[in-house]
View 1 (tube, helix red, strand yellow):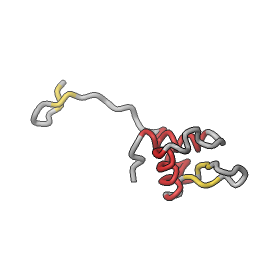
View 2 (cartoon, rainbow, N blue to C red):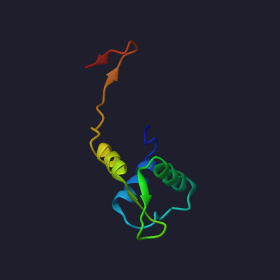
View 3 (cartoon, one colour):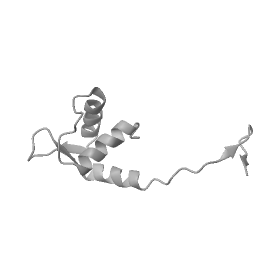
View 4 (cartoon, rainbow, N blue to C red):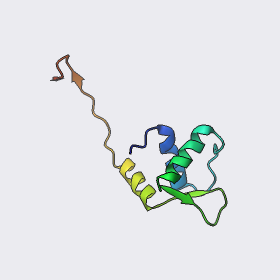
Length: 85
């Protein structure tokens, strides 16, 4: 599975770094991202704080993977797929 969108990344990072309720929790995209992350086992309810989540070991591993992505390289390609330069 891929994380799919910048919104999903932002929501995962929020729950990984911030112990508070997401500031846009009522926005449909944030609610959907929260549900997806919960259903895939990447976040879990914070037992000490109602309405808050924290990353699981799986979620922490996904954050680590995101942090290890290399910066994209630029390439110019001709109509045959050959890299130019």
